[in-house]
Image (tube, rainbow, N blue to C red; front, top):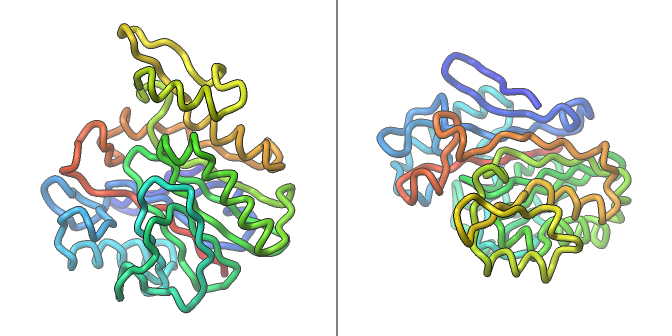
Amino acid sequence: MKVLENGSLKYIQFDNISKTGLVRHYFSTRCGGVSEDEFCSMNLSFTRGDKRENVIENFKIMEKATGIDYNNTVMSCQTHTTNVKVVTKDDVGKGVTRDNDLYDTDALVTNEKGVAITTFSADCVPLFFLDTENKVIALAHAGWRGTVNGIATETVKTMVEKFNTNPKNIVSAIGPSIGKCCFQVDMPVVSEFMKKIEDAQRFIEKDSCEGKFKIDLWGVNAFLMEKCGIPKENIEITNLCTMCNPELFYSHRVMGNKRGSMVAVMELI
């Protein structure tokens, strides 16, 4: 993982994905944009209440830095599901330059060049997938609900079923999100993980606060990826906690609803 800087702009790229030479990609931070107040400064969401012109300018700043044309962006309406959609050039611009009809969708997959799939987060886990053999890419938004219900598994399953992906050929990355250090939950959430994740106890520990626990979402998602057949050595984990680094990232747990959002973006070239 590298944090790339250009003046005040900061964004993240993953070494294992970059070295393939097959895609353009990035995970944004909150640094280097034009948004103001609670959106300061690289907000890339049109749905948080920021000025539209500021969000577009922020995308143009990222385009200049990464080469990903914001007009090629495809966004979905994320609702913490495990729903995965395959998108094509017919979907380009949805959520940016035209209305978005990709409702209740938390993962996007494509095998077409010039389609910049995008997910949003501000504590939830961004998951990157690249099939280096069949040239297929996917992004998933994994909050705790998406994580425990297996959106990582569903994303790989879609790549296999729709594009004949061999999971051994997937390189993947787990981006900045809330870490085990900060993801404090109560017993009902723990119970969900214990019911649905094999050997879940290895990802859970008691917190110092009575009746509270901490869960390793990075570890759970990496485990699910490996269970799908992705080699452990192909999975890059950022190990950057959004809640621990509010100067670098938006964090819902730190800022509540008065905040911007980061994006994960990937495009075949």
